[in-house]
Image (tube, rainbow, N blue to C red; front, side, top):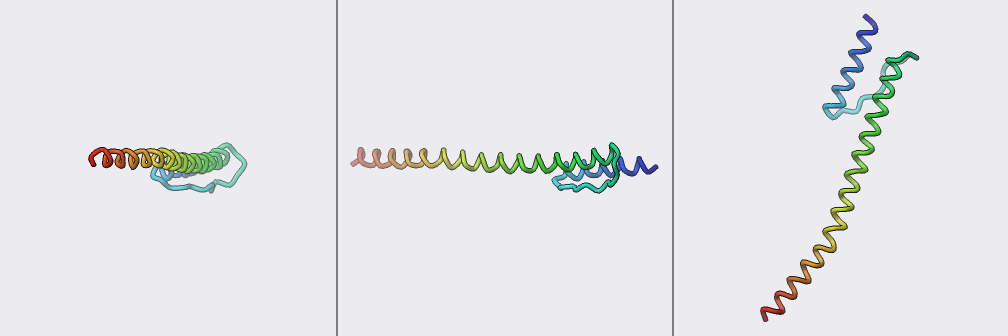
Length: 85
């Protein structure tokens, strides 16, 4: 019964992560379930870190693409205005 309770804790943590939460280790012992508990929390942290890095990279790429494209668009508009005059 104690093992089943601990497995339910792990299942709840997996569901919490799937729902956007950040679980923390709570099974304290030196067995396989405690290892899985700690590892699950480490993986959650790694995924959150990777998501933050991805978002930062996309923001940088977005900025780096928009800046030259904006300048080109402005120059093209100026040229069009000069041609119309």
